[in-house]
Image (cartoon, rainbow, N blue to C red; front, side, top):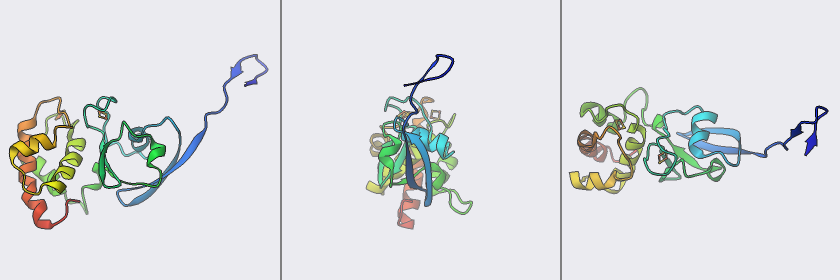
Length: 175
Ligand code: FES
Ligand code: FES
């Protein structure tokens, strides 16, 4: 511990790590402390604030992103664990000014109220649709059960995903 002239004890500098990732096709990097969660890295270091923090306890799914092809709740992953990874966030869904079909489905079917859960719902829905291209309503409800909507707007969310499914199936790729 270094001691300043004033007698105030200065704690040692916190160790930081350079984290390099590819987000929505773009190489990005920032220096963070080892304690920083992936969701905070995305929001605060990379200014990608579409990914939300709803609980910080792995419950709500608002922070869901695709990490190396798999959905993760980014409040449960340290940024340093994602070093070298490929990440897809809600910001990467729109392409050339055109909404992704799942976004269009939420728009058409009014699949949101306050919209706080929506980024995680969209990403979760896409992961689900990658495993089931033509789901029933019941299957959709199970498929998005890791994402909570505090507005309880599940009815229209399910309709939105159901509406998006055939469009996504027809284009042959989820993302
Ligand atoms: Fe990550 Fe709620 S903020 S699950
Ligand atoms: Fe408000 Fe889902 S639309 S939390």
